[in-house]
Image (cartoon, rainbow, N blue to C red):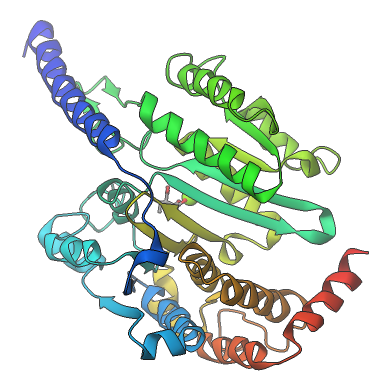
Length: 403
Ligand code: IPM
Ligand code: MG
């Protein structure tokens, strides 16, 4: 191919990508309000095991949900829908990040609890298909990836609002290999997409009383997309005079998260997709690693809650899957409960998780037969939930540790 032909072919590819982005913007513009769960006769909770250790830990989180929602489950107010088929084998068989029949089932739910799924990359034994996570976020338009990190004894109380459907991820599997020498990826920021995530962060800062938002970009270098994100943040901030806000660049932000004097000043953070991906892993490390963090993926019609770690296929190969730590997906389950309006249950589950995982630690998970199994840990959580003195027990631990 001549140089000119190669350029024309790349332009054609780019044109198609832009068309899809126009469609996405139209879809966002049409979106109505957030679903009101209190108005539903039945809330359908989808349970998706995923790959590797996923089905093991997700089953434990499901047991805990059924335990906490027992009454409403029996009354039919809450329904569980187990959805199989989001495994790497099935995805590869159908060469789709989410097979059509699985997507149809997902769309019948209101909220979803999802175990980790394997994300292939070039050179892996699997074909390089798009990540199931990324596809689900796009298909169900789950634009807000909310990731809280708390370390009370260090004064850390952060909530990340990571943009979840655009940025470097929007076309992450659709870049152009122009020729052997040149490859191009794209980063997308739309007005609607940036506005809705920034607004969600400010709304949360206001509603929670945290009253502080930090906008993180690299707008000094990535001038077009990050520049737009920051610009929209300036506009949105004007609607929230009671919420203090500042903006930081991602590089210095990454450094300042480890500065004990500075980091306690951060509260709610809002940031484009890729920066959010990276910064939330760093943040989770202060709390005990990605295995301890939960993640909510929220859209107007659907919401999905997940563990933020991977599928750990090695644990399955080595017959240790039953020893996997279910804390992160259980934390996801607590966020799900809060999202659909079971505030008391969510709070109790969070307290039980703190007691079992951080304070009392009667059982320890090591990932091998030297520690407890996921099932034993879930039993421990449920025993703790049954304790009528749960709240005072939690309060006394918090007082002791954070004086
Ligand atoms: C996350 C994960 C995913 C992401 C991967 C598995 C595609 O790292 O949820 O943070 O990059 O978003
Ligand atoms: Mg990540």
